[in-house]
Image 1 (cartoon, rainbow, N blue to C red):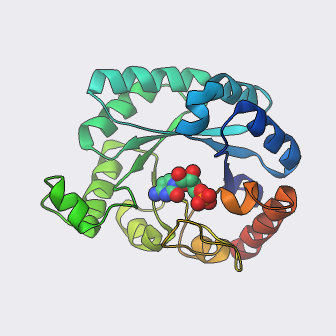
Image 2 (cartoon, rainbow, N blue to C red):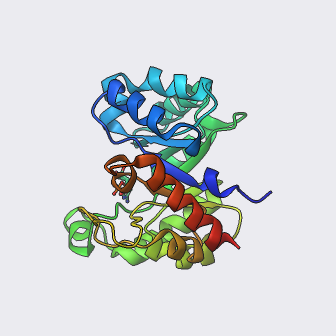
Amino acid sequence: MPLEPRDRLIVALDVPSVKAAEAMVTKLGASVSFYKIGYQLALADGLPFAAGLIAAGKQVFLDLKLHDIGNTVAKGVESVAQMGATFLTVHGFPLTMKAAVEGKRGSTLKILAVTVLTSYDDSDLASAGYRLGVADLVAQRAAQARDLGIDGLVCSPEEASDLRGIVGGNMALVTPGIRPAGSAAGDQKRIMTPSKAIAAGADYLVVGRPIVEAADPKASAEAIIAEIAAAHR
Ligand code: C5P
């Protein structure tokens, strides 16, 4: 079943406190159905807050980028699955991805792999001891994610069309680095507008500052949803 345009927008709740998160969720109201919670909020009492969002009918993406020994990853993923989250990120290391798939078994949780962090370049990988550059490592890990039964990938919109060729139509591609025309890039280096990202093959768009720092966050979210809907057709 095709996704509704509204359900393809994931708002990154990159705010310092549950109080600030609650205020933003109230402002966005029925306009936004899906929220991403990362370290900042998760480690500031954000997990009970996330459970409350789920109880209120919202979808939650926990961006925790797990990576540890297999048993620890699998148990952590089990806990997230019990919470009722929709998406959880893990690093795209094969043993970590395998453990995450085991941990979510029997639940509705979907595991997203981060292939290579988009802030890394070839020299960062070389100094960490990797033989491959970013493009080759992204392609290798995407193929491994597909073969291990991972549900989707977090990727830059620029990578989306190449990755679609590797993973096929069944895996979700989730892209941050989205900037509506005319909005500030912030620290994002490789950005794309919502319609271009959808055209490139993204299933879900993660948007933080263009919404949470807007003078009117609800209007900003609605404008992006309208752009997704237009690109969708
Ligand atoms: O504010 P902005 O729209 O740039 O927020 C994007 C969100 O996506 C942030 O929460 C950021 O941590 C996350 N993200 C990213 N690039 C990645 C992975 C996650 O920007 N490669």
